[in-house]
Length: 205
Image (cartoon, rainbow, N blue to C red; front, side, top):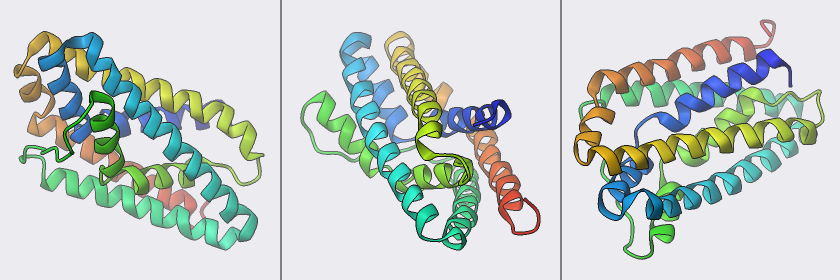
């Protein structure tokens, strides 16, 4: 992966994991109720889920590249369309508070379930991989760059949310779920989807 490609991926992933959602609500709540240190257990659960989904996405994209370049191209376009959908949906729902539905249990298990059933998880990870994986470069080489980048940014994002909950209490929810902040992040998804979709269109790459 080139330096330019890594930069584009890193910026995208930073937007992806900092966009407020169920994981952010859970981390802030943990910081408020059980403190920063114990709240890190939930961050570990989110990283477990992220590692699992990153691996599954990598395997899926690898299979597509081997099976059919046309199918891989189609997934890239669908991924770009999904990013635009996420942006439009995020803009429309920016005024709504995010709810968290998960079974009661240990801090780790609850966080893992919330991360796994998060609507943007499966499709979002696949959309991200389909845009940034280069079919002409061995997938293993790219994973050595993508995995640590994605996991580091994910950890930093949710550790920050946990710290905000521990330090600011309920005020953190108001700050993080500011309507215009959420709309700016939603707009980032739309722009990324349009640009990446245009680049993936045959004849324009």
